[in-house]
Structures are given as C-alpha cells and as structure tokens.
Length: 236
Ligand SMILES: C[S@@+](CC[C@H](N)C(=O)[O-])C[C@H]1O[C@@H](n2cnc3c(N)ncnc32)[C@H](O)[C@@H]1O
Image: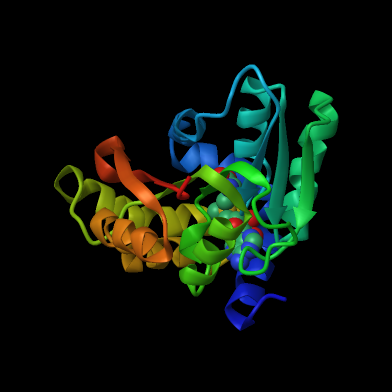
C-alpha cells in the first residue's frame, strides 16, 4: 500500500501519463532513449538462456521494451504503482505484439514477488520518487537472485553546475515552464526539478547501496553527469 508521499506521486504521474513519452523525448532531445539503452547494457542479461528481469517504476514500459527487444528469452515483470502509466505502456505492448512483458501494479516498497526471483532489476528515473529509498533497496535485494544485478538510471544531483550553469537554468526555469504548457500540470515538472535538486550525488548514492547490502557498487556518468547509472550486485 503506497504511503502518503507515494499516493501523491502516483496521482501526479496519473495526470501526466498521456503526455509522458512525448515530453520525455522532447525535453531530453531524445537522449533518454540512449540512456535507457545504456542501462540495459549494464544489466548484463544472458543472451542464450532464459532469465527474469524486474523493471521497477516501469512507467510506460520503455526500459522493459528495450530489454525485451534485445533479450527475447527474458521475461520482464514491469512493476509500477501508477495504473495510467502502465495502461499507456500496455498500448505499446499490444501495438508491437510483445508478450514477454507482464505489467504489474505494485509499490516498490512492498513487491509481490518471492525471494530470489530475478537475475536483474532495473529502475529508471524512479528511485528519486520513492521515499524512503531504503525500503525499495531492501525489496530489490530480497527479490534478486544471488549474484543478481541492480541497475539504476537516475538524474545526477541538480546541485552540481553543469555546462557552465546552462543545464541548471534549463532544469530550474525552462523545464517546469515547458512541462506546464504541454501537460497543463502546474506541479509535475516543478516537482521534477525540485527532486533532482534534492537528490544525492553519486558518491552518496553508492554509499546507500553498500549500506543496503549491495556489493561491487560502481557508477557511470552520462551527458556530463546530467544522468548517472548506478550498479550494485547481490552477494553470490
Ligand atoms: C519518471 S517515471 C519513470 C518511468 C520509466 N521507468 C521511464 O524510464 O520512463 C517514474 C515512475 O515511477 C513510478 N513510481 C514512483 N514511486 C513508485 C513506487 N513507490 N512504487 C512503484 N512505482 C513508483 C511512478 O508511478 C512513475 O511511473
């Protein structure tokens, strides 16, 4: 059951679900597609044998689709607590005839999966929205198989100046305004900028993953650190 914060987040994504994909690609100049591709590289899913991936905070299923497209033997559980986002994604599954992805409405803080189910777990632009993050880390660790990989794609901390401050101006001023015009939602894109500002830097997040029990933690910065991929492995 989502907590109060979770209910506010789910209802906000519900309001912008119809615009989400368009705005994602538009506001990132299409770079989000490359970032998700790189995230799937880090999952290191086996090519020649069956595997299971949990895509948490799956939204409109873009990471799930990227992984399923590249790994036909992989079964993907696409979990998100916002039904309208999953409904948008399910339309894409039908349109593309994909049957290896199962959308599941679930809170990342209480996952409806048995211990040690998945070879890998991804979460793209989702961990920033989950409070407390530690509850999601604990659940992700629980459902991963020994040796399983957790790969997180998330914005870097908005506190760092990037490209001489141009990115920070874009993030804090332009992005909320453009988001408001298209999605007609006053709060959603302000929320995006505020949560990026609050979000910890890569060192701190790596520390959180280690404290949660993940090993071999590392990260890769993309686009000058605008986004970061974090990887942690469950003890084999
Ligand atoms: C910014 S979207 C990212 C969607 C997708 N992963 C992508 O790459 O576009 C964040 C998603 O996280 C979901 N979310 C946030 N908190 C969650 C939680 N506690 N449990 C499950 N889903 C959550 C929201 O409903 C939303 O669909």
